[in-house]
Image (cartoon, rainbow, N blue to C red):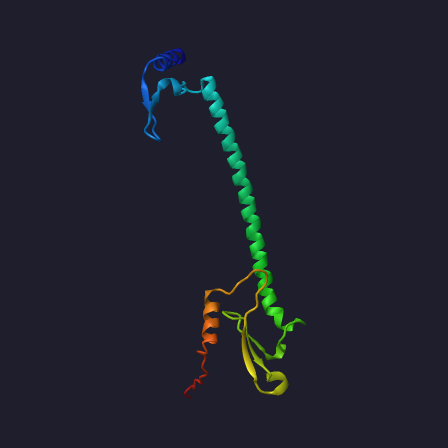
Length: 165
């Protein structure tokens, strides 16, 4: 069977037969097609086959390395988020925090603190601050930016809600 296949391939290669490329649709002579039967490659085809096999191995190694890096980045991101969350909770008691920690009221979300400046030492509020704690390269999210904008536009009101007995 192998001899018969090789004989057919030889006839095709020695003919003026044109082959259409399935990718680009261009025609080329069968002599340039590197035809072979099963794994009985021509030297050129074997060389190309080994080249492609090596490229696949290299790509597999790249993918494996990329997966490791993704896992490392994910772990690092989780760690950073957790450190940020802890830092937000502890910020008001740190020495370099510019507000009296007794004036701070933690909200957590969407803004970390509302600070009632003066409440602890003076017994009355002189100013209010909406404060969000950020670590590293963290930035305000969409909702926090919206809240900042509302405060800057002075669209803040005070209301009393009375419950009926």
